[in-house]
Structure formats: structure tokens, C-alpha cells
Image (cartoon, rainbow, N blue to C red):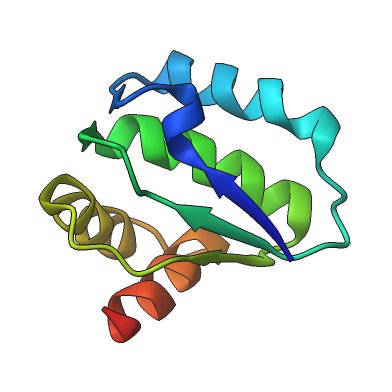
Length: 102
């Protein structure tokens, strides 16, 4: 299992283009066969647009083998339901699993 610490992309994660840029930066280091865990520790703010773009690309690349580590970050906790409700795909499933554990 590989862990992606989102703080490596900054503490304020706010735009769809920046989410895609973050994914493109980390993709060469990932093995699509290895499950991924996403760690929100150290992130102050993440918007639905940034996380939607990042998580969509990651879920497609890994065939949905992504888990979100539990967090108490209010920004993350506000963002996740938006993605879980707005979508009906692997991203929504990843978000729903995470929300059930938090």
C-alpha cells in the first residue's frame, strides 16, 4: 500500500487545474496495481474542485484502489459529501467508504 500525503502539494488545495497538476506530478511514482491511501494530515483547506480532479484521475489510474485515511479536517469533511452526492462512479464509492469510517 502506498500513502500519498497531500501536504506535499501545499496546505491550501483550491483549483481543478492544480488538482490535475498534482496528479500528473505524482503519477510517475505510482504503480497502478498497488492500492493507495490518501493522508490529509497537514492540509488546511481542500476544495471540492481540487479534490474531485485529483481523486478522479487517481481512481481511474488505479481502478478505484484508493482509500481515504480518517481525518478531523473540517474542510475535508465538508468536501467529501459534495463528491459522494454529486457522482455515481468509483470516486463516489471511495468517498462513501471513507465517510462510513469517519
